[in-house]
Length: 374
Ligand SMILES: CC(C)(COP(=O)(O)OP(=O)(O)OC[C@H]1O[C@@H](n2cnc3c(N)ncnc32)[C@H](O)[C@@H]1OP(=O)(O)O)[C@@H](O)C(=O)NCCC(=O)NCCSC(=O)CC(=O)O
Image (cartoon, rainbow, N blue to C red):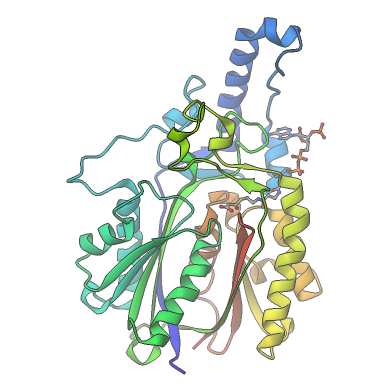
């Protein structure tokens, strides 16, 4: 069977940082303004007052300390409470394509590849900024890549499902090398006015080069030993914004269900066992045991959740270096999270070392990728 390797990764990180303290100051001002404006209705019991948020809660409940965003001023303006991004001309690169090109250039350079050596582009992300043409095709044109390109969306598991799709296409012979990009503008699907989740997300873009091992030039090669993807339907993480919105009465209004929403506790309870079983069974199917793993690069949604999964999989508390978290700096960046962790915490592994990249999120969807440093 054709051996497929990951030879380069890249991360584009936006310049703007929002700390928990800045975020909470803006949120609490919004809450005070809302409560003052709606005092009569709140007193009459018609609507609920918006309670204050706190940096201490955020850090304790999630492990998140800050997040990067494309636009900070809109998010932190109590009268706006969402990012404000300039509409772009058709002649300009779209926002997602621009992030993707920046991350892709780093991944290409690390892989020692030129665009002419790439046969396909997959843009795998939780949200795409337009229906069509595909962002991936725009990235393909911007980088002057021949071949084909397409967008795909499996929410938080877009990147791992993208790896499986790319690996299978390379094995099947439809491409020799594939660029995967994961531009995640999570700030735009987050309800920054909702205390339960306003701290959760950040923006970023990751990129990876997957190719046939016999064509690889980079010293940093991770063989994809095996991939396993699972899905199980759940409404516990949901966003109803979609192209039928205009057809449904009242759906064009400012509605909570047209942005990210979740039953965080249920997600926690249901996804931890699903993911630990996925990794454990995937290792068993490959005649591997958890004590042979040098690293777990987990989805970056919640520190406690990762601590649980790591302990369940390894049968002991993981050492910090065995299960690196990046969510304290980036927050949840949906599909990009585990790839940031992989990109920033894999250079130190030695030849023969094994690890698992694992995503989980809306769908539910979860992906496990067993890799070996060559
Ligand atoms: C969302 C959570 C951080 C919430 O943490 P907890 O479960 O501890 O907290 P909770 O919601 O029950 O709230 C506990 C108490 O704190 C209060 N509380 C809530 N938010 C608060 C805030 N900002 N500041 C202060 N207090 C707050 C609540 O009202 C409640 O009060 P009281 O006790 O008085 O009622 C966590 O459940 C979580 O991370 N779950 C997993 C989420 C996850 O992995 N999601 C996937 C994301 S989707 C994804 O990754 C992307 C994708 O799929 O595309």
